[in-house]
Image 1 (cartoon, rainbow, N blue to C red):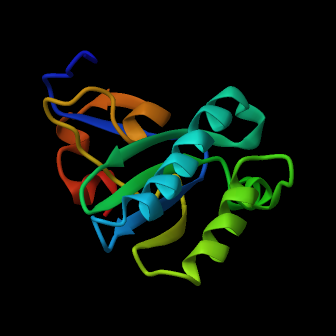
Image 2 (tube, rainbow, N blue to C red):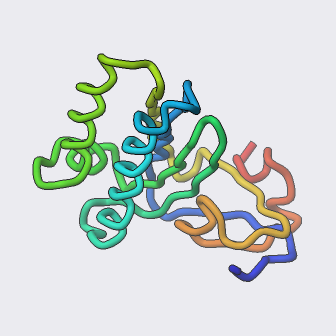
Length: 156
């Protein structure tokens, strides 16, 4: 288990970054043969991304339920799109297979959202948490009087 930071922490980054939210929604739990391949395809991409830092992937967090969400951090939207289109990477074949299968059933859905984040226009707080999210990607700092509130961390 990762070590907890028992004090209030905030994370900063030296560069702008991309927050990429991607996931799948299980619309029919009983159609296991339809949604497990989608989940497994997503799972195969993560080791590939970690093994190849030049792709621009930094880290991710995952939440699991009916909707599975991966919150990914990337260096840039350009690098994210290069990976998405790379013929020698895991993503493109998985995307093509999903599109082919999606025409046959609505048992599983997929989605994504992409946000380009300015390094000075975001804020966060972590209390009793191990390094998480932006705290794994950026630099964790203790919250002090000068950055005690969300408004202060946003420079307002």
